[in-house]
Length: 316
Image (cartoon, rainbow, N blue to C red):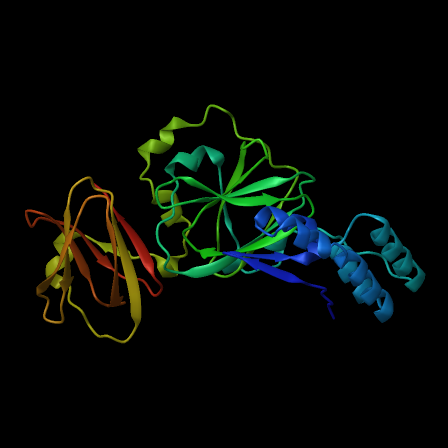
């Protein structure tokens, strides 16, 4: 039986748990006066745990407020009950399914990262167990860093985001520590003290890899389009319209591409030109093949959509 004492304050794309203390909310856009007016969630939670008087209640309090006078009192109450405090910081990844695990990437891959699309909505929770404040930054569609605020030591934040949106964790002096990609389902990331700033001379070889490749590699098989050779084109046709899905094409080829659907008779149906540097999302079905051609009509690639929304980067 688990007890939680939570007060939620919402800001755009953020839900900050008061279990970690309201002092962390102010950097995310809550006026200081409001934060000061609600500065005693720890005391309120302590009184609720004391009123219940059970080991589960005290464990819940300690997991939320692990340091300070109240935490020491809570441990004393547990000792009196003949119980021992549970470890406050248990890595979430040990207890969740792979679909709810965030993918950790190195800071040396930063220049090759950008958000791909807003297809699959998800959430990611960051728990700051590092003992120091951390900056959260979203890598946007152009590869630029967008500030998501300061996460104070011992606090946590949950962000509404999308599966292909990378987040960078940095020190207050803006040194990159790690990059994370959300999971299919809500993922929880514990930021430990073992994270160290990346070398100031970042690996410049990342430019040799397509800008979206590392993001695409991080998504599950169920959201990866199947690629076919152009030589297989004549044997392909759409089979049925049973499983609806989506497919996003990102044109990183440096020149325009033409999108064509292979219909139920195996004939090509023109879906227009995709200009270089642009992207398009198509509502389709899992068994509907798509041909990518040059502007001159030469076949470059053939793709079959996935069970989930898939993103394909078109390269040279």
